[in-house]
Amino acid sequence: MSLDDAAQKPHDRLAAWLAEDMAAVNALIRERMSSEHAPRIPEVTAHLIEAGGKRLRPMLTLAAARLCGYGGPFHIHLAATVEFIHTATLLHDDVVDESAQRRGRPTANLLWDNKSSVLVGDYLFARSFQLMTATGNMRVLDILANASATIAEGEVLQLTAAQDLATTEEIYLKVVRGKTAALFSAATEVGGVIAGADEAQVRALFDYGDALGIAFQIADDLLDYGGTSAAIGKNTGDDFRERKLTLPVIKAVAAADAEERAFWVRVIEKGRQEDGDLEQAIALMQKHGAMAAARADALGWSDRARAALRALPDHPLRQMLDDLADYVVARLR
Image 1 (tube, rainbow, N blue to C red):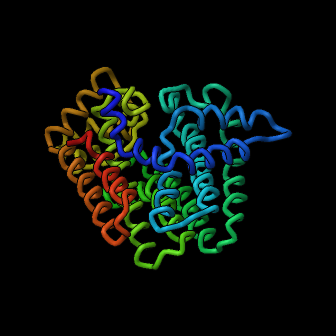
Image 2 (image 1 turned 45 degrees about the vertical axis):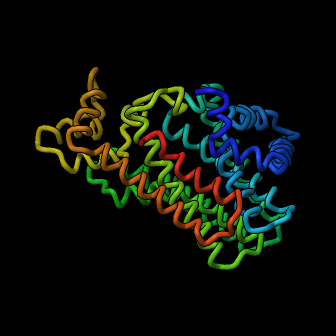
């Protein structure tokens, strides 16, 4: 891909449009991730925050606020809040998943230890609540507090549903709404609320973030079985090795005959994986059209996200958000 092509990515266009706001967000993040008494906190936080993430969630907050005509300053606090919540969940996720790689780099729990990752994640959650109170807006507090609870609930649900072949697509969607879409929808919704947008626009922003988050997660789950490590920031097949029941696996299990189900029981429920099992899993998913069906679901959620934007003002940022909804599933086309 040429540099010209790269510059046309929707998140890059968003970043360019919101550059001044994002500079203020980054400065606030660096200020608030400091700790006078525990230098381990900024060390661990900086390892993840400075690792080259796209800052997509805080950009969604900034874009939503600007799209609804907001002039500042509290969209900066809310964008930093969203990034702190996201970073805290990543630190906790990597401990729960025993992951060794995040954004193409060793995870914090691998470089330091699980205790540091959990405690620094807790610190960032606390910092996020300090930031959101600066707005003095109780509705914003309610949205972000509920999102934080929903994220934790989704992680626990995933834990209990993991390795259970009885997990349905409905349960999967609840997990995804918790672990991914809740923060996307909160990020966009609070942007509209702080801007004083009308209820129809606030609802549209919520619906956009919700559908975008679901499309994003399904695409990520699919790429785990067909992407490259460089493209997805983790090792291809990690979800399989971690025995996660993602959407393409759930669809393949639902269509499995007795012999195929015995395979899934062995590799997912019992965790007895052997050489060639990943390739066999992918072959079974392709045999039953599970990959294609999951892809269609992702594209459908992307379409829903774009449809939600029609209730919002005509603005260059609206077009960028529309393009972003298309981009998160573009690699599946």
